[in-house]
Structures are given as C-alpha cells and as structure tokens.
Amino acid sequence: MKAVILGSVALRSQSTPRKRLLVHLSQAVEMLALRRAPSTHVVPLNGGLDGKVTVQCFEVSRHEFTHFENVSEALMRLDMGTYGRCTRCGGRIEDDVLAETPLATRCLECAVQGPQP
Image 1 (cartoon, rainbow, N blue to C red):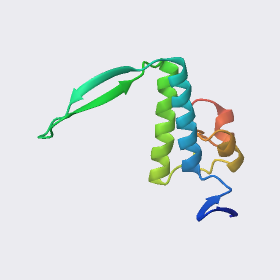
Image 2 (cartoon, rainbow, N blue to C red):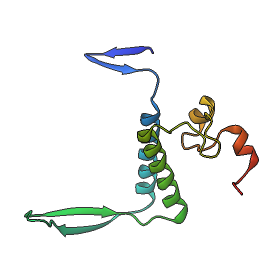
Image 3 (spheres, rainbow, N blue to C red):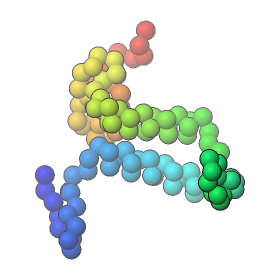
C-alpha cells in the first residue's frame, strides 16, 4: 500500500472499508443537516453525575432512517469480521461491488437472484 508523507503524518492513498463507511455516514449526516434544522434539548445527567447535556436531534424520513441503519449494520459486520461476505450464501462480495456500494450485503450472483424466499 502506498503512503504519502505530509509533515510527520503518513496518509494512506487507499481507503479502508471503515474509512469509506464513516465518510459515507458523515456525508449523509451533513446532507441531513443542510436540509433540516435540528431540535435542541437540554437533558440532565443521571447516575450521580451533576450537570446537563445539550442534545441535537433531526427528524428523519423512513428512507433516511433505513440508510443510517444500513451504514450502522455495515460497521457492525466490519467489527464482527463478516463485512464483504454475502448474507445469503456466505461467499465473498466482489471488491468492485464494495468499492462502488460499501453497504452491499450480497454478492453479484445472489443480488441477481432477487429477494430471499
């Protein structure tokens, strides 16, 4: 893997799956923030902690919620070591498919077959 040196920090020229997924998530949140203003809530801390925390929330559509769920599930698969494995047959999802669609859950062969019965 090729690295580019900037100052004393090495940056890899190739992105890891985790980086791609986190960039994908960051872009989705940014787009959401550009379209809607968040609601803000001040919530007291519990469990013997003093103070308050300010929480910002966005209303999301079903489609947006599903998208965030898919990113979260892809990150969990990455943590469990199953990212890049087809959820239908267990085979390997092609690298070009994951590069184009990092949330992919099926290999090309299973994707063509359609939904599970």
